Each structure stands twice: as structure tokens, then as C-alpha cells.
Image (cartoon, rainbow, N blue to C red):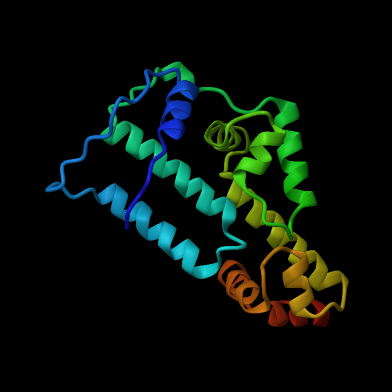
Length: 195
């Protein structure tokens, strides 16, 4: 993998954290970076699985990479007080409203952050502090909850439920649902209708 880190992204990141701008990134080519290897593996897995429905997760990984590059290779140091706050109550409400309303869309962290008048990295960090989970996790839970609701209250085909809930297609929906619940959507629906 090769990463391109825009100067503006580094400057914005430093400014958000009340830190001095990163002058340059210095990496010793003979030194292995296990953190970067792990983050890169997560990124590749997310992209291979389904790029369209994992966009928030991919954005979150991108922000993690930016933080890692700035701190590890750029020497960025933040003040302890810079990381304390979460979202304002109106921002948290707005972010959650947007995610609920746009379950089936290609929603990005930048989209939600703009609605909250924050930069993507500041939004992601603040959302986690306020909600206790990352934005992509929150969106995934919303999608699963809506899928369960539709499975129990409608007779819609699984393919339609997958699209309505933002899973992209039925096979991806089945994989995610089965991993989360321990049963396929069809089996889960049948078990609920038999009870």
C-alpha cells in the first residue's frame, strides 16, 4: 500500500488539536510499523467486503491513519485538554437524525460532520465521546434494528429489506445479519413468526 497524506489534512488535524503544524513526516524505512500494518489490513478488509455500505467505517480508518501519521511520523503532540469534549446536544441529535434518515444512502463522516459544523476528525472523536461508540458502529446498529423491525412487521423480500436498510445487496445483508445475530435473516424471521 502507498498512502498520500495531503498537507492540508495534516494542518487541519493539528489545528483541531491545538497543536503546532506538522512540518514533515519522517519514516525510517527499515523499521516495521505494526500499528500501520493492522490499520491497513482493516482498511483493505472493509473495502473488499463492501465499499458502499462501509463508507463510514472506511472514513473512520482514514482518520485513524491521519492521526497515526501525524503523531508517529510528524511528531504531533496534543494538549490533554484538547480531547475532553463531546458533541453539543444539538450536534448529537442532528447526527443521529441524519443517520436514521439516510440509512440506505452512501453516508460519509464528512457529510454528517458538515451538518454538525465540524471537521470529520473532530466529529468522529466527539461523537465517540458523546455516544460511546464510533459513528460507523452507530449506523450499523441502526441498520440492524431497522432490518429486524422490517423482518418482523412486513412480508418484504430479503433483497428489498437489504436495500432499504443500506446493506447494498442481499448477500452482504445476510453475512452481516448472520454474524451479528447468529442466524440468517430468513431463519430469524421464521423463528419470530412461529412464536
